[in-house]
Length: 357
Ligand code: TYM
Image 1: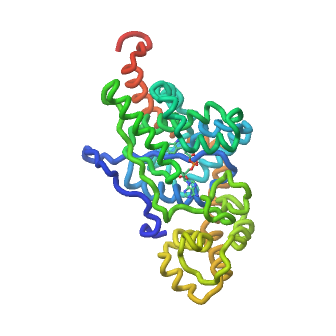
Image 2: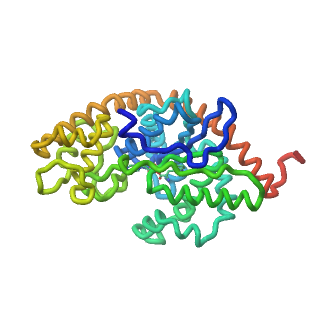
Image 3: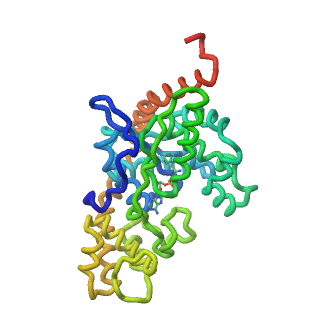
């Protein structure tokens, strides 16, 4: 893939001064709430992370604490956490270059979240749109308090590591904004403690839409799986879903997000996976039918995903080794997280364990 089509983030807006050899830090995560990541997670997040790991001090984690804000089957959650880790690595996250860990293995996340809960206004938390959407779907009696405070836990995830940037999709912007507000609030109340992070929002070109409902983003919570391309699905399923993607009644292949969302989505996928600009693809398919594009795209995507799927299955065949890699990542993460938490605890006035420091 070329960077011209997949380049989705900018250099930090407020370039913090760095010591020689030091890199800007970025941090991000994807929930382990499905049996596979989907193509939106892959193109919108993972591809970008892999690109960033050379240039940045990168921290990637699996937010399993976030996953239990809605009911989860325990055995399934454990498996999905490993499956998510395996896909990060199979997709190109290199554990020797960055830090990869599971959120629940670093207790400082929950500990800092409590402190941040106590400086967040109830009204402020109530304005988080993802909670409002989900609570509306589930009904407020069904929605958990964990779901309500979810963005505050996300702020803790971020602030613990003092990152400069948080690479995420537009849907996560409000959550990163909250973490900025909380960092500023804590800093002004208790003294300089947190780096105020920038949201590195992926470009629109990295947003992938549902194949059956191409005005809604591809999402694991979609009503029907037919609109999803999962990284770990067998190639036949993937090809079938691409070939059945909803398009319009015209025949012309051109990019027009408003008038032709289905074809535009397929062109975006084609462009990011092949590394070719959309204009070239449109020129190549001039005079051809939608069916031609779909058949070629199905082949392109299944060929691209095959080695990722294979590598993920290899990693999952040795769960002890995967768990060892994750434990190593958690140890590295704790080194950073514990220092931030100790500073926060001292600043809010918690007695030092075992006497004065
Ligand atoms: P999650 O798991 O919903 O999504 C993970 C990442 O994938 C992006 N994404 C997409 N990009 C393009 N097209 C799509 N259709 C698409 N669907 C999802 C999301 O924008 C996101 O970047 N709350 C977070 C997880 C989290 C987190 C954090 C992220 C917890 N703590 C701290 C960053 C920092 C979430 O639910 O992402």
